[in-house]
Length: 84
Image (tube, rainbow, N blue to C red):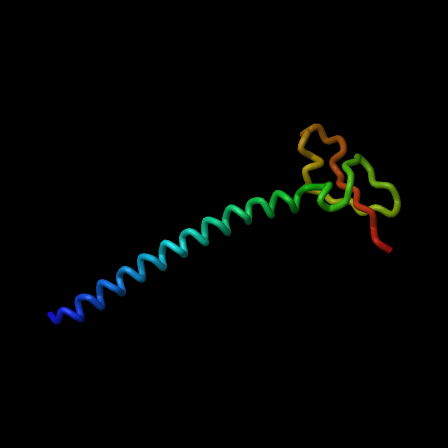
């Protein structure tokens, strides 16, 4: 085999390994940030709301937020003011 051909194939292998390492690092960074984003979506205060058992008129009720974290069934709704 030609010496230049061997050097070329080794260079390609090294570039592929470096590319895979970069891909793995970026994937881990994205996955860790995606988890934080999901937690913020379920936070009632980040929506500008308050937890209550019943929403007053002029407020929209959101379910599946951190308001039902106590497991008791009280204050399960996240009441957010409706923009008019």
